[in-house]
Image (cartoon, rainbow, N blue to C red; front, side, top):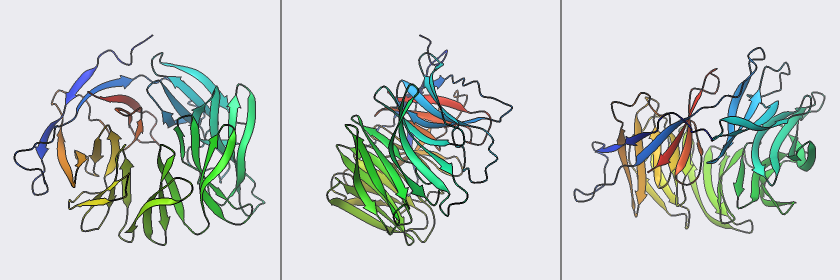
Length: 361
């Protein structure tokens, strides 16, 4: 078994309190996170003539699932849609399995399921007023089983989460009026967890203990809420008129940022929906989580970490060692377990990308 990289670097991230926005008392200093960082050597042997690109769809501590797509003549094909999915073994640094789409069928997101792969895909019927026909498919070897299907106006299915062997995914369906929502696949059966017919956009943020945490955009407002499939447990609504909204979730809190609001950061307790506000100026930040920490990078590449404790949000600057040869990107990340994350350096549309495994010491 190969190692991830020739050397593992330990990054000690020292805390320097941000001027004018800290709430931590002089007697209490939030401990800065310490990380181990290793480069993941990914070699997918892409076809340069087809200008193939990879997009990370799923990760854990052992494997990464990439969707691989090349140039497409069809004008309705959106983004990097997959001609095939590739499961990459991190320790062996090799492709473990490939799942090839049928002709003119394009994959979107995929997660491991039982002894195979569960993925969403779509194809285009230009004569239909709804050009996207979608399916959720379980594939084991060459055998493909259709789990769910429908029609959609846009290429919008993008959330698929594994929780204790149960798969939760978002959907949009125009085959019998407009509906969208969250369904789950459990014991081979598909069950609708939440369904709506009057919203503009939604995303499944997290699933824990069977509770779904959902983000909804509707009529220039954003609502975050939790549901067990039978009732709404809590909800928080925000005005979205002022621009972007960004968020991330750990085991205890949802941290969200609203551009133009008086208090840019809001932490929402996942147990009860209670909100904590923080007055701090950040420019178009991206967020990722690792353990109890939220890692933040703004549009000027300034990096911070935030931690929620009691009734306060503490934000402090990440101070990286001078000997670090690269700066870890925080804009594109995937969870690799509670205390680990996979970070990608390089834009989705660039030819070369680098991947790093970040572990909380």
